[in-house]
Image 1 (cartoon, rainbow, N blue to C red):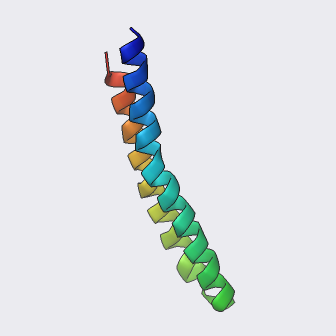
Image 2 (image 1 turned 90 degrees about the vertical axis):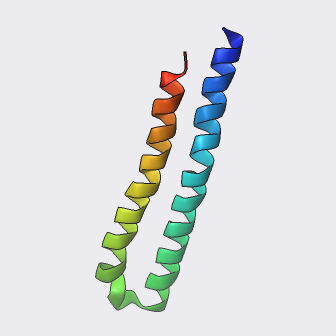
Length: 70
């Protein structure tokens, strides 16, 4: 039972590292781009949100895998 709980914790923990770093980098680069060219907010915001959603989906996949471990 303890090994199952450890496996679930590792699955979601390791699975959240990549998306967490990715979303941080996406936000940082978007803010840097907006700081350099404030008129481009509309062109930057939508793709940034779309890419962040895709990165977040990977974390959700890790959560699903963690729940499927028996």
